[in-house]
Image (cartoon, rainbow, N blue to C red):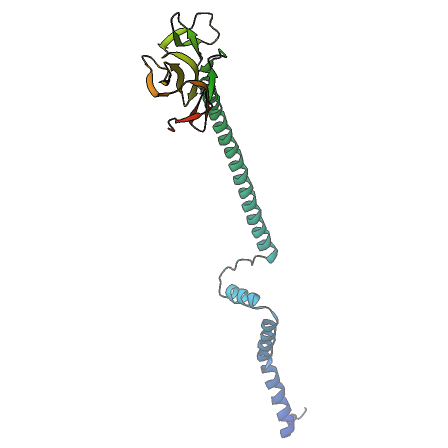
Length: 245
């Protein structure tokens, strides 16, 4: 029968090493915490926040990439440019249509105005001598001096008509000629050593008026600068002012 073994006393150094080994094994948890801190430091702030939120039980949305943001901005810019182009095209079409409509509306009025002007053209500062037997046309009628048996008349006839001229009034004495200024006729004549000027505005029921009378015998007439120029047999000229309005 073996005798029981005696426990050999251990030295303090040996006991210290054993305790140190146990203590070393118990310190493994702080070493893991340090590693986690290093990993958190190496990760970016966004990942750390995501890790913390996931650990707390919150869902974390994925972060949009910079490329996606740039694509969205480009799409907005393209949409704005397309909208501006469409607006400009619409304005051009509407403007062209409006101008065309205005031109179409104005065309008939322009033609009517031109035709009215041609039909009512008033000759200005024109004269005819009785010895020439000429006419002056106004509003579709031709005016002239005609002999009426024992005297002379101022007469009118429709242009192109074959009818005899119609006498409008009797001329005082023997006519020298007549002129027109601003739609009014002025008939110059001589009688008994005096000269006369009769004015006449063509219209229904119009009658002549005695516009001027003087001494001397007129041989020729002229009209210029709103004046009726009478030249007598001695070559002396007499200027008679005509209405400006």
